[in-house]
Length: 420
Figure 1 (cartoon, one colour):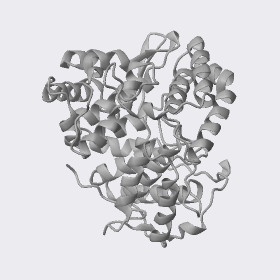
Figure 2: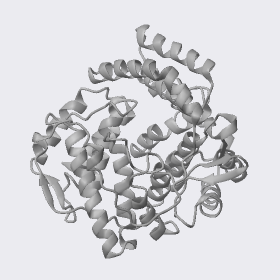
Figure 3: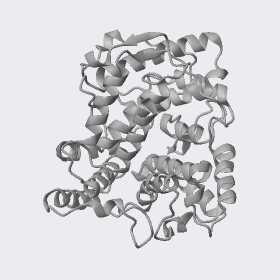
Figure 4: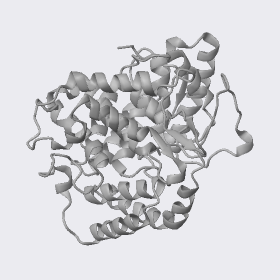
């Protein structure tokens, strides 16, 4: 495993003084690139139409969910349905399914029934996502609860039949191949499913920490080798070093460079990937490309994206020359300052608006702070707040108010412990 290097300029910030603020004017943006690459962006006209039809409804339901979660209410099932609805709107044209799932979501928010069942294994297949209908969502949502079991030295109580579609090397190859290329004429963008697949499979097959909860009936080593071979030989773009969704448009297949997908591959393999220098250069070349094909959040601060960037930079730092490292330091200093100014207030409360659940906001906020060394005590950390103890105490109090059964909240608490 390659040791991360912190890449931020020396500076000090008083976190108690920061608060949410407006984005800087467009005229203040400066474009600096290390190199130029093909910035192909798919024209997803169906997504725009679906968003026009459902954006307002989903926004109001998300606001209600966040408000009730921040008050400590456990709404795990509602959160799962909301995630699936959001995916249906942004990646498909399945309006009938959207309408049906919106009705399910409203019902879950008003029927008053406890939703703690959504944290437990589904007896049907052993997954941890009973309120999702799509298999990939049920599979992906099972990863964090399985990791929690592994940390506690426990085994799943229900057999993990959820592995059935991916229980041989050939099935993994065929499944990943089926998600790799989206035909724009079909109206379905498989990019999200592709990202969830590599996220879940990468953690379950590449991380040593998940080995203890892997089904004993399956050959984990062979499955991991199949995934690695697909990722390295079929999927990675040697020009950019990146991985991303591919799109068929008017008979031509075009490749995208995807920040989130690339983060999942390089992070779960501890930086042990090919074309590392290209990855490092591409990361800064896509600074002003809209997420997920770059790390421009459209004027909004999202610590999830910032965490992805810093993790990639830390894992490829030694592959940058001195000039590139200087540019990287400048960019990451701005990224850190932006996070402090826009994503957290003086009371230690993270902005939940960009996320599906409140727990996610705290998990990714703390993940970014840890990876950037912002509040840590590591010798290589160069950017830090001046009142670390006070701020972490406030963040901890806010976390205490959230549903403790939420895996995101549990994971955020572990991240916070690393800062204390």
